[in-house]
Image 1 (cartoon, rainbow, N blue to C red):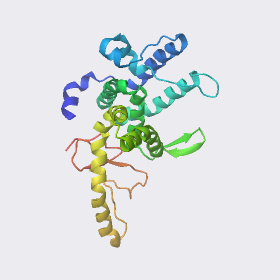
Image 2 (image 1 turned 90 degrees about the vertical axis):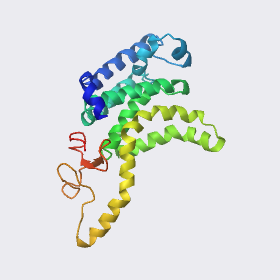
Image 3 (image 1 turned 135 degrees about the vertical axis):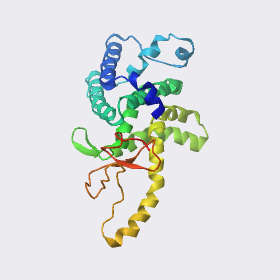
Image 4 (image 1 turned 90 degrees about the horizontal axis):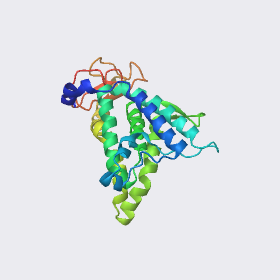
Amino acid sequence: MRWLEKHFGRFAVPHLTLAMIILTAVVTGADLAFQLGIGRVNLDSLLAGPWWHIVFYPFRISVGELFGMGPWLPLLLFLYFYYIFGAQLEVLMGDFRYNLYILLGVLFTLLGSPFGVGAEFIYLGVFLGVATLNPNMQILLFFIIPVRIKWMAFFMVGMILFNPLAALILHGVFVPILGPALGFLNYLIFFGPGLWRRNAAQPRRAARFKEKVQGGPAAIHRCTVCGKTELDNPQLEFRFCVDCEDHEYCQDHLFNHEHI
């Protein structure tokens, strides 16, 4: 990752979230207004064309009706929430990594389109990225009920995987799981190693805490850069860096440190 950023970082598009919001509004809005059928990709269009549908594919999302007001209100809400989560993830990851994350999302959802994967997975990946880096962030469900974003992420992933996993476990049919597997692949590439290391280190942190508990409160998390712990600020989030082996950083230094 560091090698890629060093050699290709200058090609990163700044403010990619804003650009994608504008393009999604134009492409999806035009398709809804004029029934153009643009950006709809299936196996035939991937193999034989027309190829121009692929260009618009990342910006054509499926929206239903809400409160009898047609698809326009859901589209506006979608763009609003994507701006909130996309802008935050862009800051947390940096321009190059965020660009690469979105690019891989586009590529893998294209490959998964014959299995029913839509461009919505690109934007779902952004939501999952924020839920991973800032799991205790609260959002208002139905604009009323405060819910931590990590629980929303678990629920959404569970809803997507329930039927494919049931088909795989109960009937041995693996084809339905291929779509979600490809749709989530960019997320697994970027955040999977960090989640794995975090879970693997959990028993060690628990043992360290148990050893020190007799001497008073002991820190479980400690930032490699600034040395802050959860004792300094209980609201501070700590994560393992994808590129650093077994080194933990606070939310202020996760994407702002020299890799070890």
